[in-house]
Image 1 (cartoon, rainbow, N blue to C red):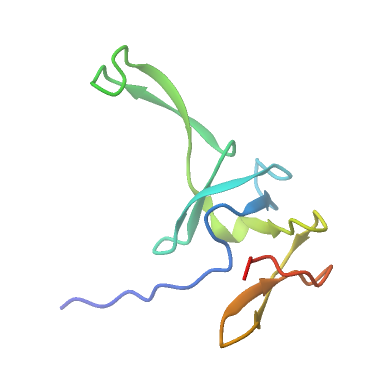
Image 2 (spheres, rainbow, N blue to C red; image 1 turned 180 degrees about the vertical axis):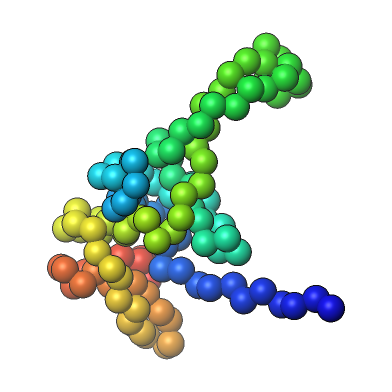
Length: 114
């Protein structure tokens, strides 16, 4: 019997600037490349780089060792407000016609373009 997994909606989206708040990479900032809501993880540019050994192929004709970012837990990162440049826990507000947007709790500016 299959059970349906519940997917949680997170307040971090692709393209957001985030800061790592715990772990080995603490204090690093980067842009979110990918959000994996099923596993509760995010891939951030320049954070948690791992080395992968690639066999020669059409995409990588010479093969070799390539560094690429690995996913980290979404609870280990915090959104950085683009206006005040501080990390914040965003507040969800209804702007107009039932459209939801994220708002910075520190400076009060909208994070999302509406």
